[in-house]
Amino acid sequence: MEVLVVGGGGREHAIIKKIKENKEVTKIYALPGNGGIAADAECAPIGAKDIDAIVDFALEHKVDYAIVAPDDPLVLGAVDALEAKGIPCFGPRANAAIIEGSKVFSKDLMKKYGIPTAEYEVFNDMNAALEYLETAPIPTVIKADGLALGKGVIIAETRDAAKEAVRSMMEDKVFGKSGDNIVIEEFLTGPEVSVLSFTDGKTVVPMISSMDHKRAHDNDSGLNTGGMGTVAPNPYYTEAVAEECMEKIFLPTINAMNAEGRTFKGCLYFGLMLTPKGPKVIEYNCRFGDPETQVVLPLLESDLLTVMKAVTEERLSEIEVKFSNKNACCVIMASEGYPEHYEKGYEITIPEEVAENVYVAGGALKEGKLVTSGGRVLGVTAVEDTLPEAIKASYGLVEKIHFDNAFYRHDIGARALAAKEE
Ligand code: AMP
Ligand code: GLY
Image (tube, rainbow, N blue to C red; front, top):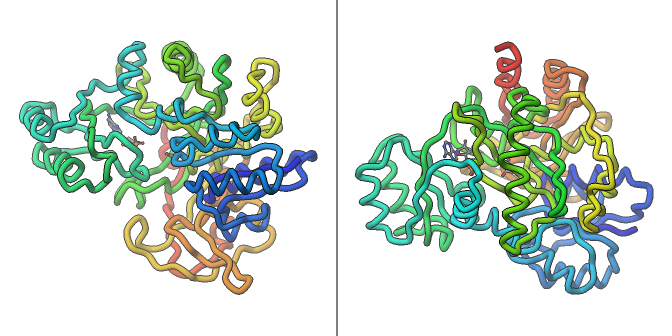
């Protein structure tokens, strides 16, 4: 069986390594993949947003199954286009991917179906938004409607900062058309939990919970990033919380999407905040999270491809999805300066015994050598019986990897450890 994976980051590397465990898989293609993924899949230089070229490639290479991992191609209809040519896929169609593609859509969906989330107002007129901010509670949260590379959310601590955020999105269009509409919402507090789930539109199977670390530097200082590390499971996500989320959030969301004629099939990611008033949805993603995937999939004991195909064929209720009860920690090694300016092209050395634990996000091959090509360069995951062991092991592996200008956080998992002791 030949499998095509669309995307080229650490998340895709984790998916590919897991898919490879299936004995029926004879070939994996990655579009575009990256220099590190090239060790595990055949990469071709086709961008993840180039839907026509992806479909042509899939037909030409007669792939049997496609996995569309990133948000952009999903929102642009990659699954619809592949399915139209008879290629079975893992991932939602465009009409369901909108749950991530439009914050206005997802907020209105939650309101209509009574799914707990922050209170909010939607604006398409800048002056109305600015006027609203004269009396809105502060801090407040400003979100661009559309995809914005994970940067479309601004938490404003002052009224002036909030107005500035609105102007940057609606007047200066820093996120382009994504800022035509904005959401201004209530600032919530509490621990955050990421829950990825498999769903075929009938059944929802939550994966093991995880915790992201979004700020660039230790003690949650510095700028927001795509994620500097993760641990799984997330100690705040107790069995009681899980039950409440299933009843009040997960099932209602699947049902709401069905009721809207937008059945969601694929991986639905629930970004949750456990507020004093109960769990609330901060955001939905229509895909696997990055770097959550790099701790969640190593704990999956069931065969990933079998689960994915059950989702595609709408028979998820018939199979068992098993996770190990171990702990995983992923530390991201980035290029100094990320998420702003950084240099590329430094050689990466990964000792052979560590390679299995490494998921490359920003690596390119230059004269046969792996060099840095992105801000987030790679993630290193260790799985151990306990969280302290997993943290220690992943940092031990990090020390064996080298590239110039590397930096990483030293406190991945510290918050989770503290939570366990509370
Ligand atoms: P997002 O890009 O939607 O994941 O948002 C980025 C981060 O902003 C989240 O992980 C939260 O930490 C924070 N955030 C988003 N919405 C809210 C909110 N309503 N209240 C507090 N923090 C928020
Ligand atoms: N780690 C958050 C995301 O994938 O959006």
